[in-house]
Length: 268
Image (cartoon, rainbow, N blue to C red; front, side, top):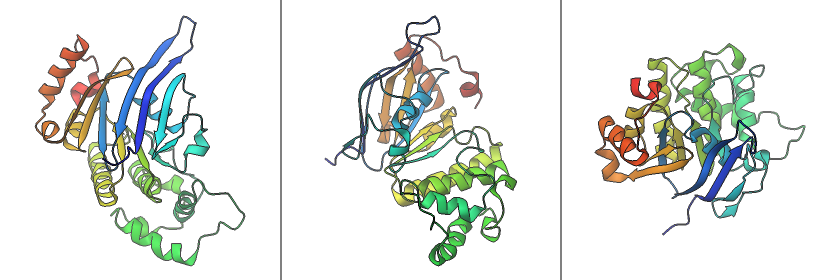
């Protein structure tokens, strides 16, 4: 069996420890992703979904446990040191791009992620030829607007561009944190289509947090459900493909001992 692309062992995280606002966000998470796994993550509010991604990205230090990426222990590495392994798209379309820079300059920055910054980071001739081709695949007309400031783009255009930037260097692991939640349904569907296309074509190992149970079932080869800081359900392959939303709700009640109280998930 191929070595895991991501391995989390006994990962715990408590915020505001020892205070009245103490919150146990992760309570001993164990998770292994094989190369090429596309995992969707669902769960109620405060289940630990975003904290899971933040711990992988190094946003917060671990309380205990280990995180390994492609065989390398990154548990103690800082967020910038882990950036070379990861691509990430956030819920907010304003994050992940430099609004005052041009589209081509943003792509050039993404291309150099994890490399040492030098003064000679100008856009090469090869990149000038390559970027319009990549942008054309997004089918948003951005290939003719290479010198437009990113801040002038719509939310959907920015999110599609951020997705392209996050996957430009074929990261070891792609983290998608409800990356279509802030978009209107039509634009969200477009960005999800692009996500599926890019992930499948490049065989990227991916974790996608979503509040949309239909999307969680439809996309990827594996689905995990979180509750109170732990993974309570992990399903893949044929079994996942047969799931329905009522199945998921029933499963949640079985393993958590209560009903799913998350209006956004139930309405989506």
